[in-house]
Length: 401
Image (cartoon, rainbow, N blue to C red):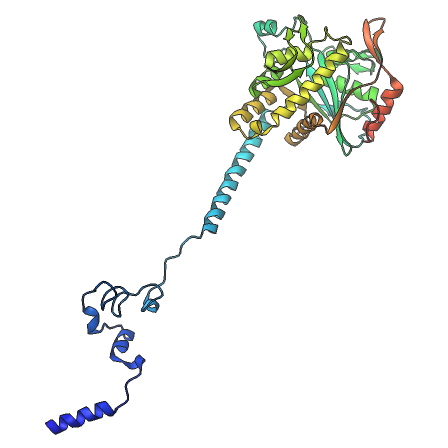
C-alpha cells in the first residue's frame, strides 16, 4: 500500500500543472456548475465570498464581469430632449391650425370687388384700401351718445387710406373724405336707378353705392388698382383698442373738441377705446381740419398696429385672442382677402411706424374749394397727384411729398 501511494504521489508531482482553462474550478464554471468553494458565506472587505473577492459577485470591470447578463437599455439625454421638442412642435402645430380656422371663421368677407368691371390694370406691388366708417352697428343709443357719434342717418366714411406695399417699401396715402372727385356712372343699390357720372365729394360715393362704388371711384380718379378692401366701424374700433388694453399716444399739444368728445392734455398718455375714437375723429381744433385729422389718424393707426404686434401681445394668449376676436368681429373685407393678406396689411402698417415707409396725403391745391352743390371741398393738385399715383402704380420710390 505504501509503495503504491508513494509511487502515485511521485507521478502526480512529476506531471506538469494543468493550464488555467482546464482547472476543475474553471471547468465547472464553464459547464454551469458551481464549485464547492462558491458556497461559502460572503465576507466583506474583498475576502473569499465577499464583493470583489475571488468567489464573490462580479464587480464592474472586475473579476467575473464577463459572466454578467445584458444591461437594460437607458434613454440618453439627447433622446429625451428630442422627444420633448417633438411634443412641443406637435402642440404648437395643433394650436396654430386651430387658431387659424377659428380666426378665419370670424372674417366678414362681404365686399365683392369682382363687380367692378372697369378697374384699371393691376400694377406692381399690392394696394389696400383701408376705410374707417361711421357705422353704428352694434351700438346702443346710450353708447352712441357717449361716443359722440351723432344721430345722422345713412352711412359715411370718416377716413380713407391707400396702403401700398412693394419692393420700395410701404406708403400710406390718405384721401380726404371731402375730396372733390368724379363719381363714375352707377346703378343705385336700393332704387336700381342708373345715375350718370358727376362731380361730388368722395364721401358721397360710399353713401350712394357702398364699398364697391367707393373703390371704383378711387380707382377711376387715381388709376391705382385696389387689390384688397378693409373697413372697420365705430364699435369695432372701440372694442379693438379696449381689448389691446389701450394705446399709448404722445401729443405735442392739448386737444379739446366738444363735437368728438376729445379732451386731452399735452404729453404721453394711454387712450382707451372711447378716447381713441374721439382722438381720430376730432378736427375742429386743427387749422386745416380734415387734413389735420388725417395726420392724427395715420399716426394713431400706425401706433395701434405697432403695439398690437409687440411681443407682450403676440406671446400672451390671454391678450392675443381677445384682440384678434374683437378686431375680426367687426372688420369687413373683400371676398378674396385671406388671413395671410390681412397679416401682410397689418405688418405693413406696423412698418410705417418703424420707419420702413412713408405717410402722406394726396397733394392738395385748395383745401377750401367751394363747389356749387357740396359746399366746401378739397381739390387735389393734379400734376403732383398724378406723379404720385404713377410712382405707386409702378412701385417706384415715392418722391412726391
